[in-house]
Length: 272
Ligand SMILES: C[S@@+](CC[C@H](N)C(=O)[O-])C[C@H]1O[C@@H](n2cnc3c(N)ncnc32)[C@H](O)[C@@H]1O
Figure: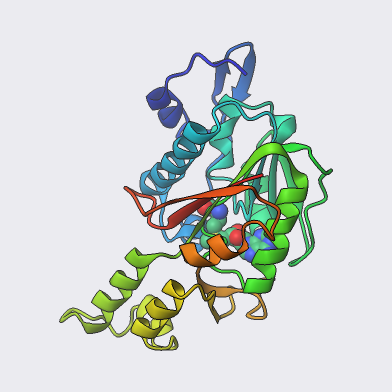
C-alpha cells in the first residue's frame, strides 16, 4: 500500500486513538491505547517510551523487508507493534497471534482493524502454507523453551512464502551485563523483581559460556495466565545455536543484529 504519511507524523498520530488518518487511498482509524498497568505487564514500559521501542523495531523490520503483503506478529501482546503496519499493509492481511487471554482481550479493546488470533500454547498458527511475507516476534523468543522455539520456527517456515523473512528477538549479552550490574552494584535493590528472578538463575558466567558453545539457555518461570513454566521463562539464544539449527528449521540463511538503541534484545532474521 502506498503511503503519504511521514515516519514522524505516523508515530505521533498513534497517540490520537480514534483519529482517522489517510494513507494513500485508505482511511485508517488509529487504535486505542491500553492503560499503563496493561502496558507495563507486557513490556515494562508505558506511553511514549513503549511506542518508541515498538516503532524502532517496526522501522528496523521494514528496512529489511520493505513491502510485505501479509504479516504475522507472533506473541503480539496488545498490538503495540502491529498497529504501525496499518500504514503499509491491508489490515485484512495483518495477523496478531497470542496464546494469552489477557493479551487477546487487551488487543481487542484497542479496537484495531487487523485480525486477532488466540492460539493454545504450543498450537501452530492457523494460517495457510506459503501465505505470509513476514513473521516477527518481539520479546517472545526471550521467553520460550527450546522445544517451543523449534516448533514455532518450523511453523513460521511453513507459513512463509519462498523468500519470506522471520525477525525475532531474544536475550543477548546486554541483558547479561545488566543482570551482573544489578547483582553486584552498590545500588542493588533487593526488592527489584528482576534481581529476585536472576537469583534463581545459575551463575551468569556459566550461562555466557554455554551460549557461546551453542547451547540454548532456558530458565523456566511462570508468566501468569496461560504462560506456564512448562514452556515460559527467561531465554538466551546465541548465534551458534542459530547457525547449527537454521537449516533444520526450514531456512536458507540468517543474519544477527546486536542490541541497538531502544531495541534492547538481539534480533535474528531468518530467510526462507
Ligand atoms: C514480553 S510480551 C511482548 C509482547 C509484544 N511482542 C510486544 O513487544 O509488545 C510476550 C508475549 O508473547 C506471548 N507469548 C508467549 N508465549 C507464547 C506462545 N507460546 N504462543 C503465543 N504467544 C506467546 C505472551 O502472551 C505475550 O503477549
